[in-house]
Length: 209
Image 1 (cartoon, rainbow, N blue to C red):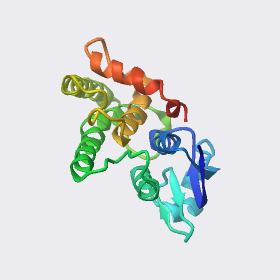
Image 2 (cartoon, rainbow, N blue to C red):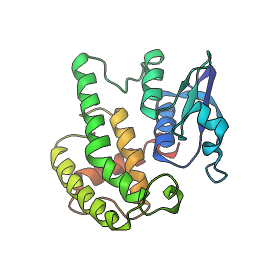
Image 3 (cartoon, rainbow, N blue to C red):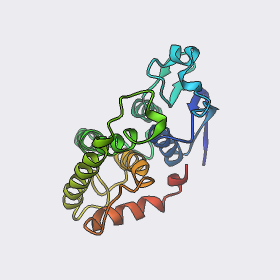
Image 4 (cartoon, one colour):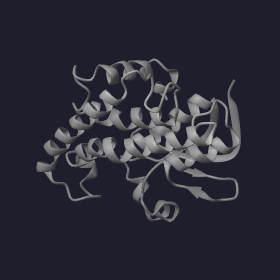
């Protein structure tokens, strides 16, 4: 069953891990929101008009009925969870919510950050938004693989990143690491737990969102 949310508009683009995270979340929840496509190729996200909405010039953006803009993908998911808690993707008890927040932060800061830097320091698209250091790319690959080693070992006996249930952390991880996979930074045979986890996530319909 799909629930159509009235009064909300999602400014979106098919490219990027942040937009992917929100689309996967919506698909898992069975939620449908009116969307407006913002073209990266035409730099529509860097226009003065768009920067009034989001000074960071980034997507996605959720426009609420009262005109408020939410401009961080995790915050968008968290907001929607308040109104549509089932199926629960942020936990249902204080302990579950804390563990999920812990793992989401670990993934963002301790794993995906290296993958993101690996991508940003070599792709021409990002040349205008940061100072690219080509020498840094290989260092990011090296550090990302070390983090994969750690995460794979930690996941022994678990089906999902934060425990035995699928949560927003799995969405975060899948969306973030997909960008590196396209550029050759991915798990190896040394990471059987992560490879099994990846296969499990790819079989979910939301992976196509």
